[in-house]
Amino acid sequence: MKTYKTEQEEFWASEFGDAYIDRNKDQNLFRSNVALFSKIIARTTGVNSIIECGANIGMNLKALQHIIPRAEFAGIEINQKAVEQLRQIEGVEVYHESLLNFVPTVQYDLTLIKTVLIHINPDELSKIYDLLYSTSNKYICIIEYYNPSPVEVTYRGHEGKLFKRDFAGELMDRFSELQLVDYGFVYKRDPNFAQDDVTWFLMEKR
Image (cartoon, rainbow, N blue to C red; front, side, top):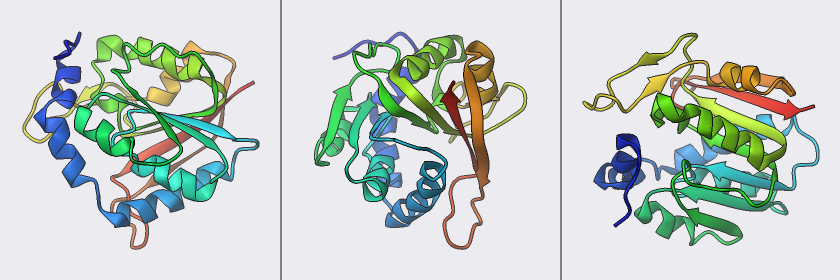
């Protein structure tokens, strides 16, 4: 059994992470993801490889494969049950690791992280920011719950498991060569392509 540095890693590698998988298989989410990522990819050029940090069962990667089927894809995931399903997706290279332990050996045109930074121990965020930057050779896309200042939120009855802040702003402050390309919000009451009140940010290395 693997041991982890933070309680948040243990949380997502365990049964709670297993339960999350079952809540996120809805095909409506796939359609919403296609709509969301179509907007984001339209603001890029030359994206032929994508890595997702915290890929879970690959719902985001499946949508991206639908949009740019010729691209190369990879996913990093901590939960064993999710990894088993992720490995069933053809054309996705899978890394079964914690993001805090992952050491990139190649760069990708686009590095993606979606509703994962909110679950990272705030003391370890700098490591994840460095990972996002080092794995990308051009674009970084962050899709998270936004708040202008750091705040903790009770998550399904659990404390210390969800944190909101300006992740994109902190990332751009850390790496001055990152420039904001575009951003947007997706509302949970969108009648056609709802998401869970997330804000997306697309940044480019310049």
